[in-house]
Figure 1 (cartoon, rainbow, N blue to C red):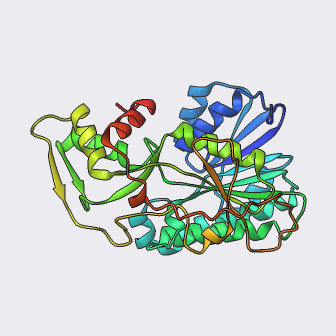
Figure 2: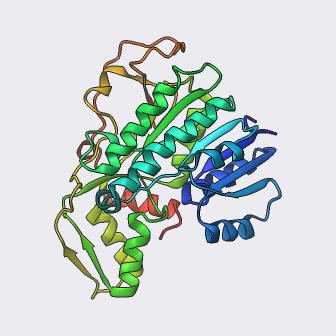
Length: 329
C-alpha cells in the first residue's frame, strides 16, 4: 500500500474533501495524517467523529508560512485542499481570495520544497478554464505555481487534479438546495440552461490517488465526467425533499458565472494525453509546457477534443443514480 507508515498532510483537512480523503487514507495504515485547518469547531467535531490516534489536528492557516513550515515537518505527502471557493465571496473580497488561493498555495509549495516532500497534490477546479471570475483566476494562478515548482526541485513532484462539482461537498449546490427546500420550500436557479460537471466525492478521491501514484511532476490529471442540467438536479432534490408546492425561481446569472464549463481549454488540448489506456471512464493528463526535467514516457499521437459540459450532458436518470451513490437521496 502506497501510504503505509507514511506521514501525510492535508490542508483544509476538515472540509468534505479532507474528511473523505482521511477515511480512505486510514485504510492504508499511515503513520499519521495531519489535519490542518483554521476552524476550531470543525476540528473538534472531526476529531470526535474519527477518534483515531493516527490523526494529528493542527489549527492553522495556509496564509501563515511559519505555522505551515512547523506543521509540515517530516511529511511524505501533501494534499492541498484549502481554498476560498465561493464565486460571489471571491468576487466581493478580492484580497482575501488572493491571500488564500494564491499566497497560501505559494506558502505550502515553498514549505514542501524545504521539507523535501515526496509528492504534492493541488486540488483544482474546472473554473480555471477560460476563467470568468476571480475564483477561477486565483485557482489558475495556483495551478501555474504548482507546475512551476517542479522546476525548483527534483526532490518533490508537484501534481494537479482538476474536477467539476463534487456532489454533496460542504458549501456546494446540493446541501444548499436541500436547505432551501426544507426551510423555504423554494429554490432559486440563476439560469434554467445552466450545465455543470458533477461527480461523487468517492470518484474525486479516486482521481487524487491515481494522480499521486502515476504523476511524475507537472501534470494536470482530469477525469472525463458527465455533465447535467442544474435544473434537473434541483427537480430531483425537490422530488425527495419537497412537495407539489415547492417553487423554482429564475433569478438570473450572477457576476462571474457561465452557463457552460470546460475541464480542458483549447490551448491545453495540444498537450493532452491519455493517462491510462486501460481505464474506463478515461483519465487524461495535461503535460506541462515548462521543461521540468521529468520523463513523461511515450506519448502517442492521438488528437483529443476539449471536454466541454454542453457536449457531455447526460440524462436525469444517470444523475439520479449519482445522487444515490453519494447518499444524497
